[in-house]
Image (tube, rainbow, N blue to C red):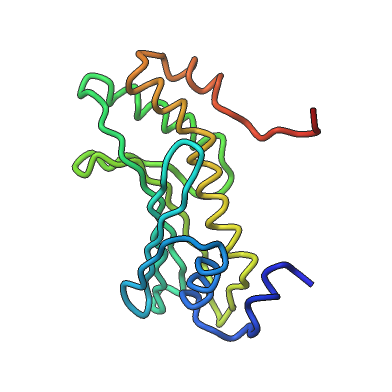
Length: 167
């Protein structure tokens, strides 16, 4: 039995209801903005990430957006965009972007649930964990490019990767 089966008892519930149950289970602060949208704060090592999940019945998609503030000096924005492109080459699902008008870094991912496919709690929990893991892994590189005057190549070389094995 999967860990999430202990707190999700039905496979036929709204995806945002599943998200709310997961947020409650992890004791994350959240706000149910509407029937089809929820926002939460997830604490990471580097910072607290704002995560919003929204369900679109018309598109049959559960969209996740994870944001964190990034206000680079104007002259560093082109280098940040280059670092974003390099970062996106390293990830399999989702993508980073920079919303310049809001001064925010954004991780976006959409889970397509076409044809009455039901999102499982494991899938949704994985979406949220993956967003935080990718932001945590690449946050130092983005900071080095924006504030440390590092080149995108050098910053990506030291981006924290997944650790394997044990010490």
